[in-house]
Image 1 (cartoon, rainbow, N blue to C red):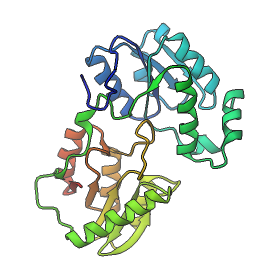
Image 2 (tube, one colour):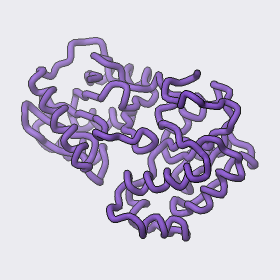
Image 3 (cartoon, rainbow, N blue to C red):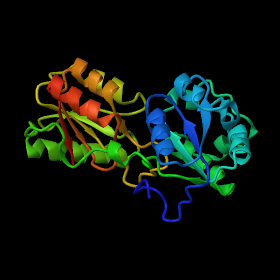
Length: 279
């Protein structure tokens, strides 16, 4: 089997529909699926999905839609004969709450939700997908080699004392448990910033306005993380934001946080003097 994150009964001849947001994550996932020899189709998000990825599919195997066109997406899954779907890449959070023009299916989903956040919205969409007999795959499928490894990933002793590392992990897990975000920045037992609606990069920039020696960025997952969507990602952009903010250590939950373009991230982290640890 090409990935440890595929269901035991995975049928590699059935097409996967890649529901692609922005960034390199969908590009890397698409390449891995193709390398595994599994048929692939693309459902692209207008103004989100990379044109490079879109252009790599023949016209009959791709579709572009607005974030709010859930009915159109479900129809595309049927038309593609998809046995599976996989969500990869972010959609700008504001698009889920502001300026969204939902079709009838999306409006019905939104109306049914008492809490509206990324987890409840994508969870409801996942339910609609699986009603079609389409299995929504774990978002880590096919990219096993892109996950954080346990231990120091940048080769040297991790510079944060164990007591302060444990504190950061505790805070990050509590933030995740409360469904506020999936990360925090701490310094010697003090919480400098926690991730919320604004996202990781803005949190890091905010933390960088304080004294940043011996600061630690921690990224984790929710207690009951649904790995079909909203899986945390750490990549070159995050690394650059850390560097600009003066934050030089990051702890990522091993096997759960995706490190996109991992060899390049580790090489750049070493170059910039940023320590990476998987916990």
